[in-house]
Length: 329
Image (cartoon, rainbow, N blue to C red; front, side, top):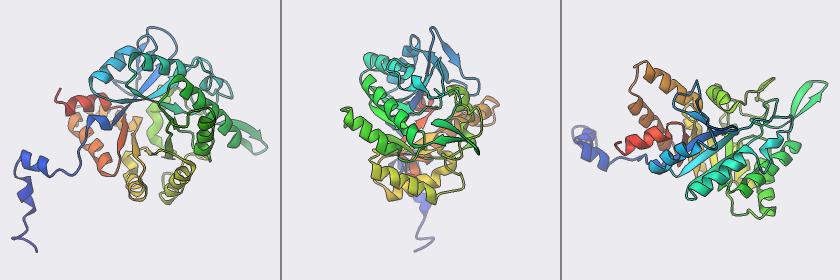
């Protein structure tokens, strides 16, 4: 049947009717809020390229946590900014490292918060790469299997500190297998792995690298992060992680890769996580500061789109603002 019998506008006649037939609902418990914790005391330092996002020291972090809890956000993604870096990123797997101490503090203050620990080496190495660097006749390369050993040590140390979920973001081949085995052997067989399964070598990470102090000191990450032009490769990466025991699959970045989110949603039953990354956030903030856009409407539309594409959870720097808007605050 067609017009005039079919009139699709009938279901748009009022706000109540539109709400009744709404297919995708964005909720506060969809959000994961990133937190950047740094060494030092009395630190609350705004990240220049990410207005409204801060570096926190352990003694000031409670301000951020209290706000997150008050807004009903149930999970945080924890990034550590250490004061010591070396070629092997030893502070990443130091049981007294910044992420480990921050995790213990968060769980002591708010045990109900789900602490997700980013598991990588790039913030902790002096070269800024996500693995061990080897020098060869052809130049520097990132070793895969020896990097897995250090990443596994990091994951186990984070779990010992109380992390509820381990989120490896390094994109080394076999990282889920290695970390799953290491966690199981250490008695953390019930600790889930939120795998950065599909992580592109993206220009959208620029502001994050300022926030995490993790820019590579040479070369780039194209040998281990994915080519933005590839989608079928994303399915291979995700399939590997499913077979290796991942509990969540992530697509990063989100906005330019919603087709990939949908591909994973259609193929896999695991929870799908979308990372609404730093440049996606910063572009909205910059345009809003100029008065060019309605920030609230743009943010909620974008996050709804990520959910509509198939995301179950969204990591977003907009988490607090979006929670306030959804609650009418």
